[in-house]
Length: 151
Length: 96
Image 1 (cartoon, each protein chain N blue to C red):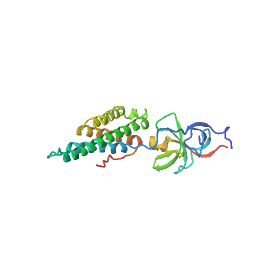
Image 2: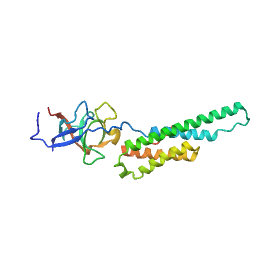
Image 3: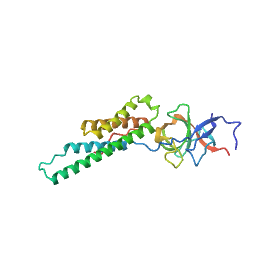
Image 4: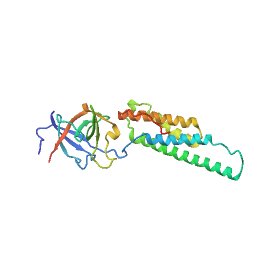
């Protein structure tokens, strides 16, 4: 069947977008919550009242585990944010969200700060930045998705 | 134009349609979930895109590519829903 002579013709794209799949800032949010949780636990962990090899070993073991998880989750959070920033968001999104680059850059910096420090303030700032990204993301997708925390 | 030919570029509709296929489209055909449509890309004004309707919410639609690799299609997973008013036509046939 040929309609070359009677039908107008247009070009239509069915191109792929290699790095893109299913995106959701929830991945960064969960990692960020873990960072904040570990930060709070580290700040709340009391130094042993009775000094002994056993009490110190227990204290150091617990603190080390908190620190290791905080570091790991902060790195994971940074990775998830960078994937969103570099793969999902496109230049055209800057028109509606001119603060996009600054928000992501600050969020990534906060991930690093939360690794280096034990700062409740920076952990909260990281969560605030992720919430801002959540809001931008779902606005672009045209859906109303409430900001919900697991913790 | 009530009927037109959309010349396909890309593989996100594989295996249903292939790069270079000439799709016969109708601007008046009914659109249902499962219809393959040609529409104005919501983020690229000069680009027409071809995808399959996966969900309809009033005057808004979610579209997806047919390619089984979830990373192979730039569709509603990336750019969100599209407006019914952005639709140019429904694919009704393919030239042999």
